[in-house]
Length: 467
Ligand SMILES: *Cc1c(COP(=O)(O)O)cnc(C)c1O
Image (cartoon, rainbow, N blue to C red; front, side, top):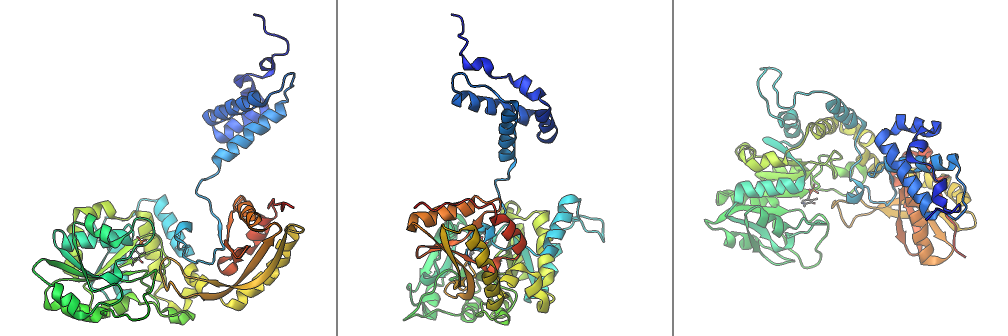
């Protein structure tokens, strides 16, 4: 059968021909031959699918479609964005934003060979923990320290090292779940420790712990109830008393602080969260805390405390599987160093800077930006500057909020329109993430620092309210 003159395929150029087009050849230089060829195939296939009989082809349209495909594939999946949720340490948005000092240190470590496990004084093998050990001990008053992948790993490793095949005694009021898969009873099971629950959900007394002590006891664990609070008729046993009890029974006392801060937050007008130094003073044998929560560093888990216990942890083969790499170690060291100068912490450490930012400063920014957004959303949404509440996030002072200011956007068309508006902001070159509350999209401006970038970014917003 002869092909008819109308067969549209006859008009489609070959892949090779498109690759020879000068504007496509340039793309090969930028994106590589394999990727560009793939893009040409995709572009031609898409054209073939939507082609109408008698259609004519335009080289420029084909190369534009090739370029669009290449650009879309070159976009990173892990995108930087504006966190205007009002949750300063948002786990889903990557928690702490690092200090410039930490970024520089990590960059140097990435670009170069480093003295990771090499002792420059002796020329012999060194230990990767050595680079931060002295600094952590200086800042916390602890005897020794080690560093692992995150605080979940720190807890797992401490339990496995000290209580494998034995009992870990915990209050029923502290059997926390921290989002996703971190549930204390399950971590304990995986660590090979048997959970020995004591007390009740709302009240645990010293005698509950004392009654649970036996030759089977591996350790006493206290867990900071970071993401909830039990109020009303409650009782818990303080760290100091648990330390005493543990000493009497010759078992270690481990205190999982969760966020665990190195600075006194009341300096920044926040309520006090237990500091690591206080936990050390209260007599815990080991303390675990996160690197990317209030500390404001990269993801990491710190274990500080008694030298002999840290040595046992370092001998555990699991330590090798949970250790941190040179980039994070460099970023940790640089972040910790900032704590030697508490007066400038609120300038240099983004987490502290966000938390310490005055309501007045945020309010002024909201008043500056409200008309800008109102102009962009003219006719589709009403925009106003209004007060709102930020929170720390990542399980620090869960019920405390920080007075803040933001932009409240009410699109015409109610609930669906709010979702559509949120989606439009998520499609921006730098997605802007807010929160939806009471039929409005709210941007809490506490964490907005690069206002210039924000202004430029929102000019590409495409949103039409459905009438
Ligand atoms: C956050 C938290 C953890 C887990 O820490 P990651 O650094 O997220 O692994 C464990 N325990 C407590 C009490 C926490 O608040």
